[in-house]
Image 1 (cartoon, helix red, strand yellow):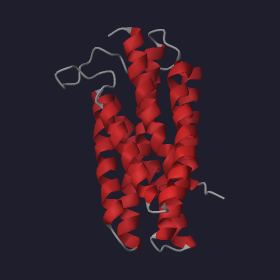
Image 2: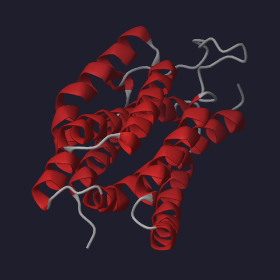
Image 3: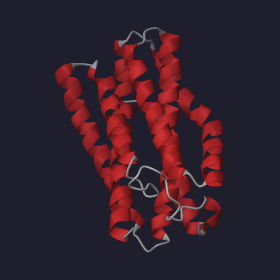
Image 4: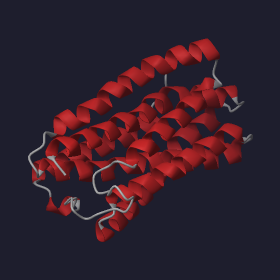
Length: 222
């Protein structure tokens, strides 16, 4: 796989993943309020995934590193996130909403460190991490503005469907992440070793991105 092809695939996935982050952060609380949840309940729904990730993220990363299946694990997590988002759109009541929202958020936020591992595999081949990651930042901004216009036009009910759409796009881009062959089987031609093989400055970059993603789950729109 050529470097340009590798970088395009990773950039596309970053762009898709941050579509979700750009609409989940500001508009899920709006949708939850529309569904009848109170401020305390909304706080629990949006904050609990952060604490679950403290256990889930290391466990998933250990599995992916041990079996060298980062792309396959990402694909599986994004399918879980998409299904959970669809379930969330149809359930009522605090406890069903809490369960579906936690599964959804934990799934798509746990993907971030695994994506960083694949991106660092590209850095070791001479690619520019910043250029790959840039597309995520751009789509986050675009998704936030477009999502606001959609919610303003269609009402708070649109919030969950924006998240569903983001998850669906991310599932599609997960199929072309480096490490997957044309036949659908995941090859081992790309070295995406664990963070233990990173240089110190690369480890710091991954850690900072993970902290940013995790902490954003606790923010609220004004």
